[in-house]
Length: 303
Length: 248
Image (cartoon, rainbow over all chains, first blue to last red):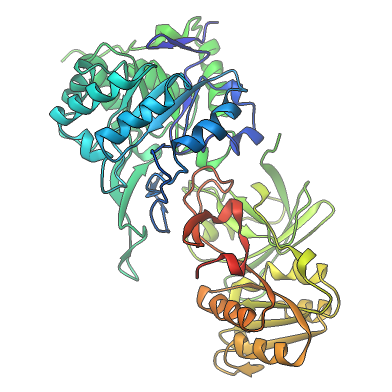
């Protein structure tokens, strides 16, 4: 059974990836399972300088999902290079560095500093929880093209652009990123959501609104992967509410080459391993010899 | 490798309305002040963090108040049912710095529960100060009596013990005894008062913080509190912190 997939020339042992921000940088989760089980680890968002993030509460549970507003808290790229990269390199998995600068220049600089220390760089143009950068870059085709082109020019490893679902036409955004040089796309980042405590009439999140993720958003994510897969040629990393092995298959059938687990990691630290094992069982139960035969294998209804 | 535990519910008590006192089988040992992260089932997604009240060889006790959907679901489990529990998690109380004098534990409302195991672990000369809104909400007084030299009770309405705040009692206890450590858990305004008294009298003090949590292990960075002007993770760097490190 072949489980290897290829993202822009980088071979993943299997299609299971952890979504940025849901898995830390592997220090904690690595105490619960061998991280070499994963196809790739996408680390928590990196900025040039340390970033303190948003006030708490930063999380709220909603039906079949969560809202978060962490706000890219992280100790900065130098800390990542000296502290996290050597630890992650101990594992037989690929490292994806999610970069979340607040300006084009900052992202260029982070990409330059990272060099070839990681296997792939994921440009986050879709974080809903920051004032500057984030989703402000990801909702306009011209802006997406500009930032992708400039950051790509600084990348020594393939560039993934992470797309926001909070747009009118995600396929157009995807095409802009692809045309500007993106080697792969990942989607979807969180939807923008809100929860209000009706007794106090206050939003539960300190920052009022935040990123909505979890199984509740999976149908939106699957539909967007399906649309984008038809619009572009570059490989896709699909994500949004993946909770079990069949969810992985669903995203791949819709057109994803790899699939990221997110909110599930917050429920149980070894959720990604469980999901991977369920997916492998799905493959063997359904006589799928090569995982690649799933990618984009949707049998669409003819209208 | 660490993993979550499937734990059988051995005993459930419901001492007063809305408060559940549960003993489960538990294979790991825990420190006072650590917490567990429980899957509540139903249509909840995230685990619920609950402080460890007491534990021993093969068992663990936690006491909680029904506050929302997760704890409501949790209260519907029966003896003999199993729970998926992650833990013990976080950094507990550090009683190596308690000194040679009298340790004092100060709890407010449901904040008293993590202090029981601590009180048992401290010396017999411990003084405990427990605050409740009113007499009908007093729980576990007998148990704190048993492991403390003196157990003081304050109620907001004066229906039992001293009328007023635990901090009023704390200051009296500090003035009249050689207090060398203070440990506290409860509402933030109360702990702020405790911290101020500890600073005023220069006494080592630790506080147990609460925050809405995600993963519970330090990976998702949602449960922060402020320490020296920075955000720190309650689940991983706490929930117990030295009071001098917290910006309350």
